[in-house]
Image 1 (cartoon, rainbow, N blue to C red):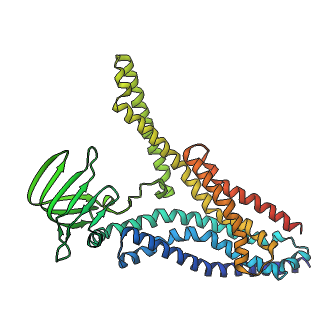
Image 2 (cartoon, helix red, strand yellow; image 1 turned 60 degrees about the vertical axis):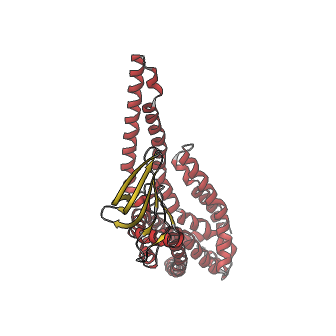
Image 3 (cartoon, rainbow, N blue to C red; image 1 turned 90 degrees about the vertical axis):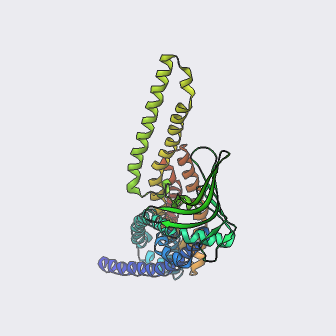
Length: 404
């Protein structure tokens, strides 16, 4: 009798998982398609990309779309299936046979746990492969982007303070008429360049955008340098892009790179601390008190301050990715017992009622914990606060349905 019950439960569990997988696949395709279109529109409008460049972006925005669409999609699938089988009294029939509800729920939780690991990997893939791929497409399209914007707006602004204003475009569609170019300088005011005409040539191998000028004036600090005939200047592609694309943010690092960055940052901080301590000691011993507050000491202090903040971000980032990836498991942990208790056969009703407390509990607590961890006010583990809240809430609901 016990063996027959186990066999029936095995078939029932496989049926439940198969129903969830089918619905998850269909919903994931729909949700991900919407996310892909949204990201393509966002990047395309921000960077003024052409149709072919937007098509090239599709494989690279896919991981970014999946990292946001997987958690709500798996919640939608489990809520829909468990809400329907509960409304059909199938869960009641199982419990009437002496089988606890956890027997039905456990295989789904195991699948959600495995999906969470895949979600963490997808989060890492989105930044280690997707973001650099998007940047490469944008870089290759810079020349086309600049000409397109100048043709329509007569002005183009890059991410690093690089600006071009033109009076018009020549008949060949390539010549910039009476351009005025502003280039930021590492120190001091920006350099202004006025020319009779100019052409833009991209050099992807060197990652620079070359501007070939004719009869130009270079103006900086009130000094004007005249250059007759052709001359050329080069701008880094990352500075020429309309938005920053260099990928220097901590959030753009692959997790395998974070440990290396942590070590480098710690070495930079240690070196700056040693330089500051040595300069302070020398200043005190030699009676040169001005050394205690000069530009070199200030530079060391800034290096320590900025480096310490960046080091905190580097420590927090892996915790953030694991916490967000395992939101899949936490969503299922809370969503399944709530859907069973609701006993609604309507897909969207089950999903909405289950997603609302998650929206109110997980995301605010996750955001607060993340901000506190980034500021250094709390340890990195605090980013798991939202997950813990869902786990505790789900445990309460599981206990509620287990007691009938």
